[in-house]
Length: 317
View 1 (tube, rainbow, N blue to C red):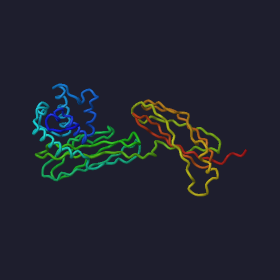
View 2: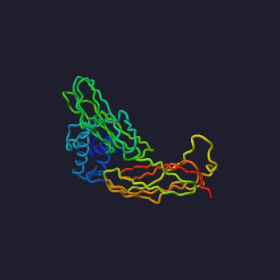
View 3: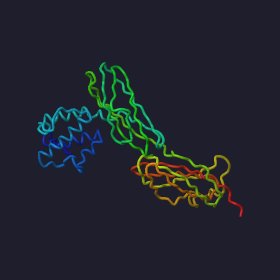
View 4: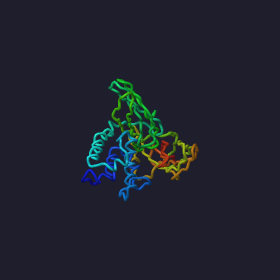
Protein backbone atom coordinates (compact mmCIF):
# COMPACT_ATOMS: atom_id res chain seq x y z
CA UNK A 1 0.00 0.00 0.00
CA UNK A 2 1.57 3.30 -1.12
CA UNK A 3 0.57 6.37 0.89
CA UNK A 4 1.32 9.92 -0.28
CA UNK A 5 -1.32 11.82 1.70
CA UNK A 6 -3.45 11.44 4.83
CA UNK A 7 -6.82 11.76 3.17
CA UNK A 8 -7.71 9.99 -0.08
CA UNK A 9 -4.96 7.35 0.17
CA UNK A 10 -6.22 6.17 3.58
CA UNK A 11 -9.94 6.19 2.81
CA UNK A 12 -10.10 2.56 1.63
CA UNK A 13 -8.62 1.46 5.04
CA UNK A 14 -6.15 -0.93 3.40
CA UNK A 15 -3.21 0.80 5.06
CA UNK A 16 -4.87 0.52 8.48
CA UNK A 17 -5.52 -3.19 7.89
CA UNK A 18 -1.88 -3.74 6.86
CA UNK A 19 -0.66 -2.00 10.02
CA UNK A 20 -2.90 -4.21 12.18
CA UNK A 21 -1.72 -7.42 10.49
CA UNK A 22 1.94 -6.47 10.96
CA UNK A 23 1.41 -6.55 14.75
CA UNK A 24 -1.44 -9.08 14.98
CA UNK A 25 -0.69 -11.68 12.24
CA UNK A 26 -3.80 -13.73 12.94
CA UNK A 27 -5.90 -10.93 11.42
CA UNK A 28 -4.51 -11.76 7.97
CA UNK A 29 -7.11 -14.47 7.45
CA UNK A 30 -9.95 -12.13 8.43
CA UNK A 31 -8.81 -9.45 5.98
CA UNK A 32 -8.03 -11.95 3.21
CA UNK A 33 -9.60 -10.45 0.05
CA UNK A 34 -10.04 -13.95 -1.41
CA UNK A 35 -12.51 -14.85 1.33
CA UNK A 36 -16.18 -13.91 1.52
CA UNK A 37 -16.44 -10.92 3.80
CA UNK A 38 -12.76 -10.05 3.41
CA UNK A 39 -11.18 -6.73 2.57
CA UNK A 40 -12.10 -5.16 -0.79
CA UNK A 41 -8.82 -4.27 -2.51
CA UNK A 42 -10.38 -1.92 -5.05
CA UNK A 43 -13.54 -0.45 -3.52
CA UNK A 44 -15.99 0.49 -6.25
CA UNK A 45 -18.63 2.23 -4.16
CA UNK A 46 -19.62 3.47 -0.71
CA UNK A 47 -20.74 -0.02 0.34
CA UNK A 48 -17.27 -1.45 -0.31
CA UNK A 49 -15.62 1.40 1.58
CA UNK A 50 -17.90 0.98 4.57
CA UNK A 51 -17.27 -2.77 4.55
CA UNK A 52 -13.50 -2.16 4.81
CA UNK A 53 -13.92 0.41 7.57
CA UNK A 54 -16.20 -1.94 9.51
CA UNK A 55 -13.71 -4.81 9.21
CA UNK A 56 -10.87 -2.65 10.53
CA UNK A 57 -12.81 -1.16 13.46
CA UNK A 58 -14.36 -4.53 14.46
CA UNK A 59 -10.91 -6.13 14.50
CA UNK A 60 -9.50 -3.27 16.56
CA UNK A 61 -12.34 -3.47 19.05
CA UNK A 62 -11.94 -7.24 19.43
CA UNK A 63 -8.27 -6.79 20.34
CA UNK A 64 -8.81 -3.99 22.82
CA UNK A 65 -8.08 -1.07 20.46
CA UNK A 66 -11.09 1.16 21.06
CA UNK A 67 -10.89 4.02 18.57
CA UNK A 68 -14.26 5.56 19.58
CA UNK A 69 -15.35 6.15 16.02
CA UNK A 70 -17.85 4.57 13.64
CA UNK A 71 -17.17 3.21 10.13
CA UNK A 72 -19.01 6.13 8.55
CA UNK A 73 -17.08 8.65 10.65
CA UNK A 74 -13.79 6.97 9.72
CA UNK A 75 -14.64 7.33 6.03
CA UNK A 76 -15.41 11.01 6.51
CA UNK A 77 -12.14 11.75 8.32
CA UNK A 78 -10.16 14.79 7.21
CA UNK A 79 -6.39 14.55 6.78
CA UNK A 80 -6.00 15.87 10.33
CA UNK A 81 -8.40 13.21 11.69
CA UNK A 82 -6.53 10.45 9.88
CA UNK A 83 -3.23 11.75 11.23
CA UNK A 84 -4.64 11.47 14.76
CA UNK A 85 -6.03 7.98 14.01
CA UNK A 86 -2.65 6.89 12.61
CA UNK A 87 -0.90 8.31 15.68
CA UNK A 88 -3.25 6.26 17.86
CA UNK A 89 -2.19 3.08 16.04
CA UNK A 90 1.47 4.12 16.16
CA UNK A 91 1.33 4.47 19.96
CA UNK A 92 -0.81 1.42 20.78
CA UNK A 93 0.16 -1.32 18.32
CA UNK A 94 3.70 -1.84 19.76
CA UNK A 95 1.96 -3.30 22.84
CA UNK A 96 1.20 -6.31 20.63
CA UNK A 97 4.87 -7.20 20.16
CA UNK A 98 5.36 -10.28 22.40
CA UNK A 99 7.24 -9.58 25.65
CA UNK A 100 8.91 -12.98 25.46
CA UNK A 101 8.42 -16.50 24.11
CA UNK A 102 7.05 -19.20 26.41
CA UNK A 103 8.44 -22.57 25.32
CA UNK A 104 6.45 -25.74 25.89
CA UNK A 105 9.08 -28.50 26.08
CA UNK A 106 7.92 -32.07 26.45
CA UNK A 107 6.85 -35.27 24.79
CA UNK A 108 4.39 -36.00 22.04
CA UNK A 109 0.79 -36.50 23.27
CA UNK A 110 1.69 -35.60 26.87
CA UNK A 111 0.13 -32.52 28.46
CA UNK A 112 2.57 -29.65 28.98
CA UNK A 113 1.55 -26.74 31.22
CA UNK A 114 3.28 -23.39 31.60
CA UNK A 115 2.43 -20.55 33.96
CA UNK A 116 2.71 -16.84 33.21
CA UNK A 117 2.97 -14.41 36.12
CA UNK A 118 1.69 -10.85 35.82
CA UNK A 119 2.15 -8.07 38.37
CA UNK A 120 -0.06 -5.06 39.02
CA UNK A 121 2.16 -2.27 40.42
CA UNK A 122 -0.67 0.26 40.64
CA UNK A 123 -3.10 1.10 43.40
CA UNK A 124 -6.06 0.14 41.20
CA UNK A 125 -7.47 -3.28 40.32
CA UNK A 126 -6.95 -4.52 36.76
CA UNK A 127 -9.13 -6.95 34.83
CA UNK A 128 -7.76 -8.71 31.76
CA UNK A 129 -9.67 -10.56 29.08
CA UNK A 130 -7.50 -13.39 27.77
CA UNK A 131 -7.36 -14.09 24.03
CA UNK A 132 -5.45 -16.87 22.26
CA UNK A 133 -4.30 -16.74 18.65
CA UNK A 134 -2.51 -19.29 16.50
CA UNK A 135 -2.58 -23.04 17.12
CA UNK A 136 -5.89 -24.05 18.67
CA UNK A 137 -4.21 -26.82 20.68
CA UNK A 138 -3.10 -24.25 23.28
CA UNK A 139 -5.64 -24.24 26.11
CA UNK A 140 -5.99 -21.34 28.59
CA UNK A 141 -6.99 -22.04 32.19
CA UNK A 142 -9.58 -19.25 32.07
CA UNK A 143 -10.87 -16.47 29.85
CA UNK A 144 -10.19 -13.72 32.39
CA UNK A 145 -7.55 -12.64 34.92
CA UNK A 146 -8.12 -10.26 37.84
CA UNK A 147 -5.23 -8.52 39.57
CA UNK A 148 -5.77 -6.72 42.86
CA UNK A 149 -3.83 -3.51 43.54
CA UNK A 150 -0.11 -4.06 44.23
CA UNK A 151 -0.56 -7.81 43.69
CA UNK A 152 0.56 -10.56 41.33
CA UNK A 153 -1.37 -13.32 39.63
CA UNK A 154 -0.60 -16.41 37.61
CA UNK A 155 -2.23 -17.76 34.47
CA UNK A 156 -1.78 -21.32 33.20
CA UNK A 157 -1.74 -22.45 29.56
CA UNK A 158 -1.59 -26.10 28.49
CA UNK A 159 -1.05 -28.03 25.30
CA UNK A 160 -1.03 -31.70 24.40
CA UNK A 161 1.22 -31.70 21.31
CA UNK A 162 -0.14 -33.68 18.38
CA UNK A 163 2.93 -33.12 16.20
CA UNK A 164 6.68 -33.11 16.75
CA UNK A 165 6.97 -30.07 14.49
CA UNK A 166 6.92 -26.67 16.13
CA UNK A 167 3.51 -25.05 16.54
CA UNK A 168 3.06 -21.46 17.61
CA UNK A 169 0.49 -19.20 19.17
CA UNK A 170 0.03 -15.99 21.11
CA UNK A 171 -1.71 -15.20 24.36
CA UNK A 172 -2.95 -11.65 24.81
CA UNK A 173 -4.04 -10.08 28.07
CA UNK A 174 -6.40 -7.29 27.02
CA UNK A 175 -7.10 -4.80 29.78
CA UNK A 176 -10.59 -3.74 30.75
CA UNK A 177 -11.54 -1.43 33.56
CA UNK A 178 -11.29 -2.85 37.06
CA UNK A 179 -11.93 -0.02 39.51
CA UNK A 180 -10.65 3.00 37.52
CA UNK A 181 -7.51 1.52 35.91
CA UNK A 182 -6.98 0.43 32.33
CA UNK A 183 -3.55 -1.14 31.77
CA UNK A 184 -1.46 -1.81 28.71
CA UNK A 185 -2.05 -4.96 26.68
CA UNK A 186 0.39 -7.79 27.45
CA UNK A 187 1.29 -10.31 24.74
CA UNK A 188 3.37 -13.49 24.99
CA UNK A 189 4.44 -15.78 22.16
CA UNK A 190 3.82 -19.52 22.63
CA UNK A 191 5.95 -22.21 21.01
CA UNK A 192 6.28 -25.99 21.33
CA UNK A 193 9.55 -27.86 21.47
CA UNK A 194 8.62 -31.53 21.31
CA UNK A 195 11.02 -34.41 21.87
CA UNK A 196 11.44 -35.94 18.41
CA UNK A 197 12.31 -39.32 19.92
CA UNK A 198 9.22 -39.80 22.08
CA UNK A 199 7.05 -42.87 21.52
CA UNK A 200 3.85 -44.37 22.89
CA UNK A 201 5.47 -47.75 23.35
CA UNK A 202 8.89 -49.41 23.06
CA UNK A 203 9.22 -53.07 22.00
CA UNK A 204 12.70 -54.39 22.75
CA UNK A 205 12.13 -58.15 22.65
CA UNK A 206 12.95 -58.74 18.97
CA UNK A 207 15.89 -61.08 18.43
CA UNK A 208 17.19 -63.21 15.59
CA UNK A 209 20.40 -64.52 14.04
CA UNK A 210 22.15 -62.80 11.13
CA UNK A 211 20.40 -63.29 7.79
CA UNK A 212 17.37 -64.87 9.54
CA UNK A 213 14.19 -62.78 9.09
CA UNK A 214 11.69 -62.51 11.91
CA UNK A 215 8.35 -60.68 11.84
CA UNK A 216 6.96 -58.93 14.89
CA UNK A 217 3.25 -58.11 15.13
CA UNK A 218 1.93 -55.43 17.45
CA UNK A 219 -1.49 -53.90 18.01
CA UNK A 220 -1.40 -50.15 17.43
CA UNK A 221 -4.16 -47.89 18.73
CA UNK A 222 -5.44 -44.54 17.52
CA UNK A 223 -4.72 -42.14 20.43
CA UNK A 224 -6.78 -39.30 18.95
CA UNK A 225 -10.49 -38.53 19.45
CA UNK A 226 -11.11 -38.54 15.67
CA UNK A 227 -10.66 -40.95 12.77
CA UNK A 228 -7.32 -40.81 10.99
CA UNK A 229 -5.56 -42.00 7.85
CA UNK A 230 -1.93 -42.33 8.92
CA UNK A 231 1.11 -42.46 6.65
CA UNK A 232 3.79 -44.84 7.94
CA UNK A 233 7.49 -44.00 8.01
CA UNK A 234 10.38 -45.95 9.53
CA UNK A 235 13.43 -44.16 10.93
CA UNK A 236 16.15 -46.58 11.93
CA UNK A 237 19.70 -46.69 13.19
CA UNK A 238 22.42 -49.11 14.18
CA UNK A 239 23.34 -48.91 17.86
CA UNK A 240 27.10 -49.19 18.20
CA UNK A 241 28.31 -51.27 21.15
CA UNK A 242 29.22 -49.09 24.10
CA UNK A 243 32.30 -51.16 24.86
CA UNK A 244 34.39 -53.72 23.03
CA UNK A 245 35.62 -53.92 19.49
CA UNK A 246 33.27 -53.35 16.58
CA UNK A 247 32.14 -56.34 14.60
CA UNK A 248 34.10 -56.78 11.34
CA UNK A 249 30.94 -56.61 9.22
CA UNK A 250 30.16 -53.14 10.59
CA UNK A 251 32.44 -51.67 7.92
CA UNK A 252 30.04 -52.93 5.24
CA UNK A 253 26.87 -51.79 7.06
CA UNK A 254 26.06 -49.13 4.43
CA UNK A 255 26.09 -51.78 1.69
CA UNK A 256 23.32 -53.82 3.35
CA UNK A 257 19.58 -53.08 3.16
CA UNK A 258 17.82 -51.63 6.21
CA UNK A 259 17.38 -54.15 8.99
CA UNK A 260 13.72 -53.21 9.58
CA UNK A 261 11.05 -53.24 6.89
CA UNK A 262 7.29 -53.09 6.69
CA UNK A 263 4.97 -53.63 3.71
CA UNK A 264 2.51 -51.13 5.21
CA UNK A 265 2.48 -47.59 3.79
CA UNK A 266 -0.70 -46.31 5.42
CA UNK A 267 -3.03 -47.30 8.25
CA UNK A 268 -6.64 -46.12 8.65
CA UNK A 269 -7.90 -46.08 12.22
CA UNK A 270 -11.24 -44.93 13.55
CA UNK A 271 -11.50 -43.25 16.92
CA UNK A 272 -10.41 -45.75 19.61
CA UNK A 273 -9.68 -48.47 17.02
CA UNK A 274 -6.79 -50.93 17.03
CA UNK A 275 -5.05 -52.61 14.14
CA UNK A 276 -2.30 -55.17 13.68
CA UNK A 277 0.98 -53.77 12.43
CA UNK A 278 3.78 -56.04 11.18
CA UNK A 279 7.47 -55.17 11.11
CA UNK A 280 10.14 -57.47 9.68
CA UNK A 281 13.64 -57.60 11.16
CA UNK A 282 16.36 -58.97 8.89
CA UNK A 283 19.82 -57.92 10.14
CA UNK A 284 23.09 -58.43 8.29
CA UNK A 285 25.35 -57.12 11.06
CA UNK A 286 25.64 -58.34 14.64
CA UNK A 287 24.49 -55.94 17.34
CA UNK A 288 21.43 -53.88 18.12
CA UNK A 289 19.19 -51.94 15.76
CA UNK A 290 16.51 -49.39 16.59
CA UNK A 291 13.51 -48.36 14.50
CA UNK A 292 11.11 -45.53 15.27
CA UNK A 293 7.89 -46.11 13.34
CA UNK A 294 5.89 -42.92 12.90
CA UNK A 295 2.16 -42.88 12.07
CA UNK A 296 1.16 -39.43 10.84
CA UNK A 297 -2.01 -37.78 9.61
CA UNK A 298 -1.26 -34.14 8.73
CA UNK A 299 -4.65 -33.01 10.02
CA UNK A 300 -5.15 -35.33 12.99
CA UNK A 301 -1.69 -35.80 14.50
CA UNK A 302 1.15 -38.27 14.80
CA UNK A 303 2.31 -41.00 17.17
CA UNK A 304 5.21 -43.43 17.21
CA UNK A 305 6.28 -46.88 18.35
CA UNK A 306 9.92 -47.83 18.90
CA UNK A 307 11.26 -51.28 18.03
CA UNK A 308 14.66 -52.56 19.16
CA UNK A 309 16.11 -55.65 17.54
CA UNK A 310 19.13 -57.69 18.59
CA UNK A 311 21.16 -59.54 15.98
CA UNK A 312 22.93 -62.70 17.14
CA UNK A 313 25.79 -64.51 15.38
CA UNK A 314 24.70 -66.51 12.31
CA UNK A 315 23.47 -70.03 12.80
CA UNK A 316 26.04 -72.70 11.99
CA UNK A 317 25.59 -74.17 8.53
